[in-house]
Image: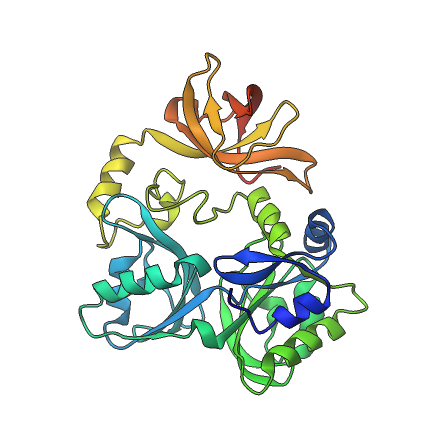
Length: 361
C-alpha cells in the first residue's frame, strides 16, 4: 500500500486504517456518525491526497480535453473548475473528474479518482494526437478537503485569498499557512460547503499545513474525517461514486449526468449518448428510501412486486443526518418515477422501498 504525506498523522490520531485504491487511508477516527455530523454542522478535514492530478499544457490542450470529456471546457475561464466525465467507446464512463482552467486554451489540471490514475493516464495518452504536454503530478501533490459550514471561517486567517467569498467551483492561488503556491478551490464531495487545497509537499509543507489547520480550528472543534463519513455525506447528496454508481458500463445519460453531457461539441462516442437522450434509456440511476427496516448494500438485487429482478443497488447506507436508510441503484425505466414502489432483496427477504428525489431529504 502507498502512504500519503499525512499517513503518520492518521496513525498517531488512532484512525482505523484500511486499503483504499492501493493507499493506506483512514476510514474513521471517532466513528462515522460522529464525523459525519461534524462536517454537516461544523467543519472537518479529509486527507484526499490519494486522488490523481494531471497537468495538460500547450495550444492543443483544450482541444484534447474537449474530445475526451463530455462537458464543455471551452466555457472555462482562468480560475474556474468544472465537473465532467470521460466517456469510453462502448457507452460507458472511463472516469468522472474535475477540470481546472489554470490558463485558458493552454494550461489545465485534471483531478481523477485514485483507483483510475493509471487507466486515465493511458486513456488520455492514447487520444493525445497533437503533442499536448502531459504531466502526472499525482505523487507530488497533496490534497486536503476542509468541508462544512464553518470551514472557510476557520481557514480565512491562514490565507491572503478571500475564501469567504470564493464562488462555488472557482479557485485561486496564493499563500496558505505561510506556504506559497497553494491552490484553494471552492469544491468538495460533501454538499456542506468548504474548500479543497492542493499543494506540493516540499519543505515539510504537508506537516506545516495540517498542523496550522488544526491549530486554527482548535477552538472551533475542527475534526479529522475518514473515508467512511465521506461516503455517507456524498450519498445523502446523491453524488456518484466511481466504481459503485458509475463505471465502464454505465452511460452518463443513464446515470443522470445529462447536465454534464453537452452535445454542442464533439467528443468520444457522442453519437451513442445523443441517441440515448433522444430515444430514452432502458434503465436509470435513482435514489430510494427504505420503507422497512434494513440497509441496501452494493450489488443487492432490486425487485418489483412480483419478485422479478428490475435492477441493482449501487450504493446504500443508514443516512446519519436523515435517520433513515437510503440508497441508489439502476432500475428499469418503468420503475424510475418518483414514488415508484420497489423491493430490495436483503438475504432471502424482499424489503419495501420507494423511489425518491435526489438529493435525499
